[in-house]
Image (tube, rainbow, N blue to C red; front, side):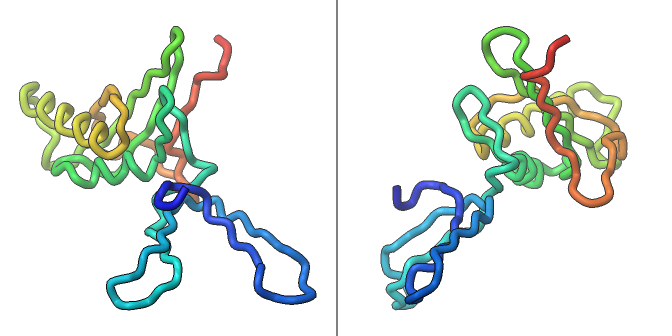
Length: 160
């Protein structure tokens, strides 16, 4: 449906005597056909908001790790280094987000750390639409990866 998020697929339709090729980008974006304020009448695409191969479905809500990162960048004191842990101890999914705290924001005062934790949880709910338990961890305690970072630990299908 127009204006709804979906996977960007590139298709050759206008060439004669060419095979029909479709290229799945795995990028999630929105398509708009209303005229651009600049006057152009062609279809427009929004910014890429995530990737279909990174998407998690949590209690019926599509969640992308990039949304969690966006929420963290909005909160002063948090870093964009995080790990999303998804579990299903009973019938419902539970989400915990481990977030590294900036060294200058790390404090031994519980009230300050609790307030930071609550701000992060509110921002995640606002951006991603899910409620997550937030665990604050020390700076540089989440493993760094060469190449693509492993941001999600999904334990829902694991036995044990």
